[in-house]
Amino acid sequence: MMKRSYTFTHAITRKPGASVVNGLRAVDTGTPDLDLFLGHYADYVAALKSTGATVIELDPLEEFPDSVFVEDAALCLPEAAIVMRPGTPSRLGEAAVMAPVLKEVYGDVTIIEGDGFIDGGDILTTEREILVGTSARTDSKGVAALRDIVSQWGYTLREVATPEGVLHFKTDCSLLDENTILATRRLATSGALDGYDIIHTADGEEACANAIRFNELVLMPDGFPKTEAKLLEAGYNVRKIGNTEAGKLDGGMSCLSLRFSPPVN
Image (tube, rainbow, N blue to C red; front, side, top):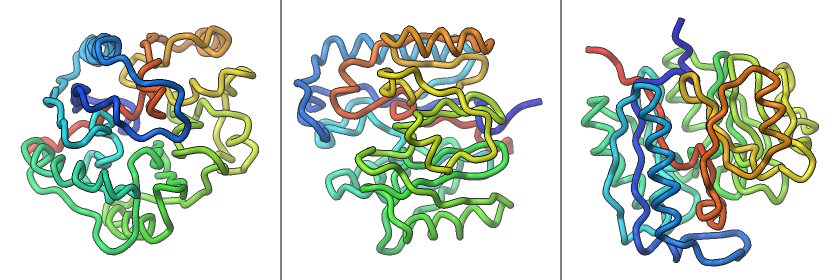
């Protein structure tokens, strides 16, 4: 049986452009190396394609340095694509540009309106609910606007809090299967994930909490051997991808793609 939260036929990615060196970052840990970033991106796309998925690769958007992180621009559900309203003014244009791309595969798309804000990086869709973490990029008004939209398809949406100092909710967690989540201890102890089975990131490896389950693969950033061992022991098919350059811009595995199975007409 296909699981709507981690079984996908399609993904959308965007190749990093030269302007990515000017991307936003909470802490400056160095300028991304474009050539290395492009190599990591190519490995990422190859991993998605290896599952049989169709990957739509978009050209760089030099006017939007952070546009490689396409996940923040939209939420893709089996029923519809929903264009977000990013909480950083410089990124609002990314969502507008993504809308016509989604229309090509979904037909009509829905757009978050109002004066609230919501980033895709704060949304974790599971088999039972949609979890949305309020953060510096997502507020309660944005969450309410999304709830109004998804309720028509029977989704339960639960607003939770992203730990202080964490950029996005999914910076600290990722879905592994219908009842299991990879998470940092700081998020797991917050109560936001109560009711799920938790695999904790190893101490000192919290930066690898942002992974993705994509069909039979779990894509995780390279360089976190203790957490990798936990996932392998639990029976997951792990594929490691270099993430040093995206990491300099607070980006992870989920940020780099929109994953979905469009409606069948």
